[in-house]
Image (cartoon, rainbow, N blue to C red; front, side, top):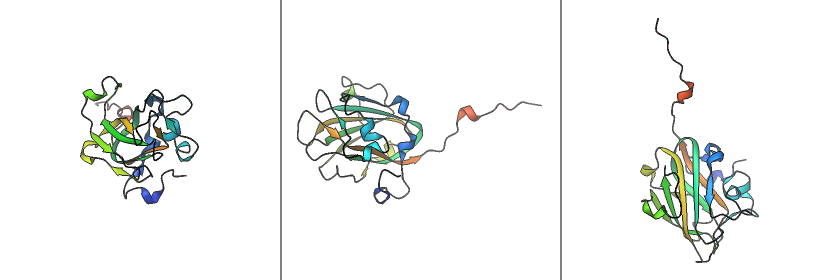
Length: 176
């Protein structure tokens, strides 16, 4: 049932797909017939016939909130050799980004992907910058072939959860 092969997951890390807050996930510039869920959701992302595809141009802006705080260790991005992502910028805990202001922010990490990277091997991020992550914004700036269409077959986040206290679970202590 694990959608990322266990052999490719770094030791001590887990696939964080079950911690994604699906109600808040967004993707700007996706084609309606090839939405983000095809690349991100468990089951869909391992189906070779399904993928995320850009619409008006090659850029994609993806926002992924998490149900609890996570530590991100690495990402897996799978795509075709020509239309797969090339330059990917990751932004930790940045909400409400758009194409008009994405360049106003310094990315937490910037990844240059080669065609070999797009075959499913985890790419380690700057771990110190991804310690207390509540959300992740991913800006796909361009693709391998320089065409107007970017395709992503799979996106996976590998890391660990941060043990935090759920404030809703706390009960008031009455003084006697």
